[in-house]
Image (cartoon, rainbow, N blue to C red; front, side, top):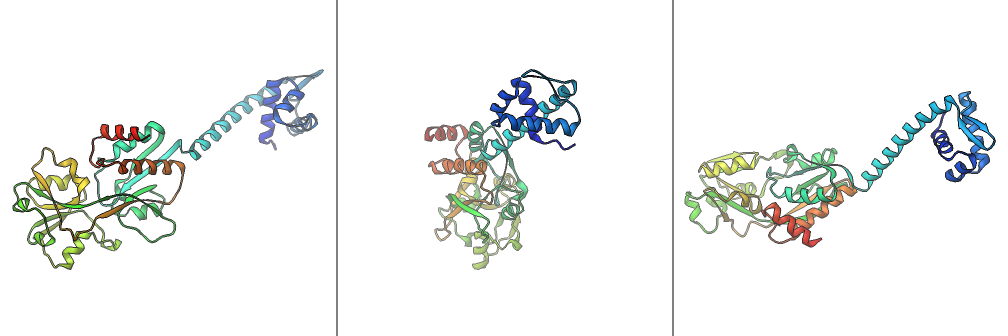
Length: 315
């Protein structure tokens, strides 16, 4: 049978309105056009959908069966249209996020909570596997937003500056270097140095490692650890020293025997970017939340409750 969507709307509307005249007005058709469509449907199905009694139309037994299907199909179609419209408006969907190098996301709950209060039906997923090569995940469509400090030259990727940070040395309080005011790269000579994993094939040598190589500094051992928490605990146990962004280490300072020391001023301040390819409303809304979060002074490392209070005041 060659039954089209307008046939289901036709029978549903005639049933509700009770006459061709009223149904034609509702469907913005002429009465003759509506009558033609009904005859077309009855001819196609080889049944009488409506019994005619004067100007009134009453569903036949097969017409009732057709109406039941029409109601289900139209309800599902309306639901589909609503879902698609909500997705287009950024009200529903899924966001996948990752951050280059670091596995610490203590800054994220405040942003997510604020975002979910406004768009509760957006699912947010943190893809920790993408921390080492977030731009590649982004290019493959497996990531929606990558928080990165390096850029790949690609016209598909859009980079928006989000915040700036400084690298600091993370040292056990009992370590001799903890007494110094400023740490230089040469201080890493013969030390147990703990740094994040990185892939040399990615052509993105971290700044500290580049300086170590350039100045020919040789740590006693260079440990590479993927997880931020594990690095912090090793430093706390006196098993080595590390280098991290100031805002990453800040929440770990309380209750541990670790201190941070500024690195020499020759180590430049870094800019972090939000890297995206798709420009959906859900992604754009999250980027606005990110910018708001990091534009408020002192929010890096601030407890979630204070973050939410500050963001609420801005709005």
